[in-house]
Length: 63
Image 1 (spheres, rainbow, N blue to C red):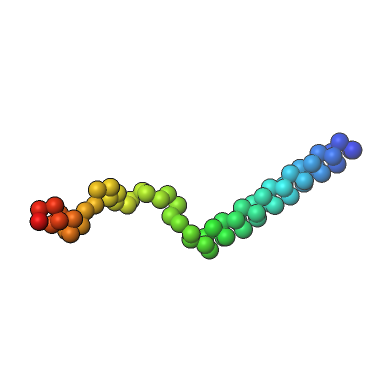
Image 2 (cartoon, one colour):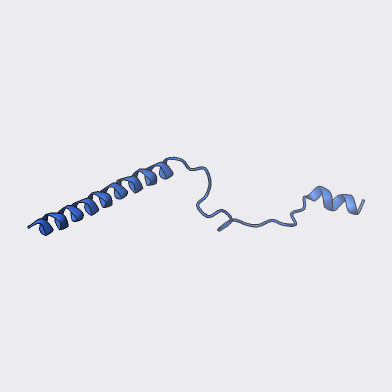
């Protein structure tokens, strides 16, 4: 009988820990969704412009 009670208590503690972790993850996800400081993956989907020249720099060389 004591073994059954011990096993039930251990399972109950594990379930409570799982619920706690689930709630903490949900809070963290809500905070992340509320504050958009930057892109999730910066640089993906953006154009890279390494050698961008303006029209003024082209005219100066031939003047």
